Image (tube, rainbow, N blue to C red; front, side, top):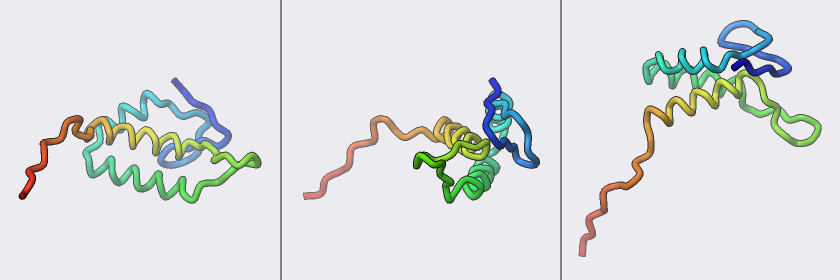
Length: 90
């Protein structure tokens, strides 16, 4: 499902559309170290945020890729739903 924004980019070069399915497939194939590196690179390209005239952050291909990388990391490393009880010392 391609997503179009004003200025699109994948890792290198600018493109007109960003294919989320192929991006998700690529992220799934990365090791944890590669995924972390990709996320850091996208974060460096997204922040500091740029804002439009209405005070809302602009959405770019970089920000979409960053969100997809974060979603993949959360899928691989979910937070524990029921942590072990803490031992109390009296």
